[in-house]
Length: 307
Image 1 (cartoon, one colour):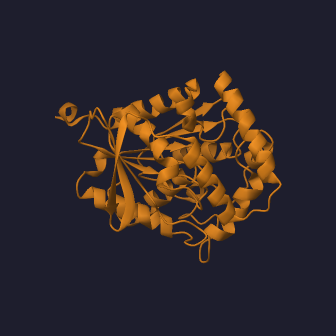
Image 2 (cartoon, helix red, strand yellow):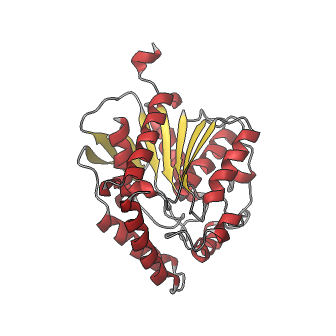
């Protein structure tokens, strides 16, 4: 593991200890974390950003300065535990995906809990996807998400399948937060190893995100309890010290049950969504983002190659 990784984990653990002592106030945690991310991470200099609105939803299109592909689009769904995060906090990470692929990406502000529980955020994603289908065929669309954003992607696929919509060509999931029962072994086994995710916080989110008639193990909410037949190709990254490690492992196992092409890549000793640290020249972040870029470009070849 790199020196950058060890330094960053040390800093994260120090901050986590301070947060563990606090009561879980969703709005206060949102304010604190959104401010921290917005001040810490910067958008790569190799992309340009333009504000847009899609179906009434605030969004941005991030384009590489050296545009290599204008025949495809990436939908980036930001993470944040289903209750925080926005365009500003995740623009840098979406920007690095654009940097690696040469394909533009759409990032947007979906509705969050507790003000807007499930399925509000999921439905916003489907609105964005439906709008983009008017310009791009489904096999020219990739979806990428981190943490809860990855969970929202799978929730969206389940609903789109129910609606008999054409699904995107492929999806990349970084440290996905999927199992809303929070009952897997890694939640407790990695509780002291994970420098970022606090188990009592993720468990505290669930009653605010999942309301009746849904439950944390409802198949439309929790993909680990769902029929994944017909899902697009999946590429999953997770760190071995993550509280959410089993979410990725169980998704991989579930995918095999339903003959879904799923690739799982575990990074030894890496924290939750370490991809963010690309700006600090962390080699594990560079490698992971390059893998995502290669996966998307392999799954969505240029139109010239298709012809």
